[in-house]
Image (cartoon, rainbow, N blue to C red):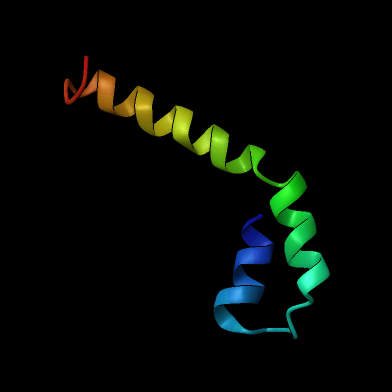
Length: 49
């Protein structure tokens, strides 16, 4: 997903709508993992219980 982000943000390549759709259908595990890490950090720091 990070490599795909670089393509979109920095316009390294032409963005293919089919590729965007595929990443949204099958690449969301990166976001779910990120959420788990952020949640754990916030709990450890005492920002949430």
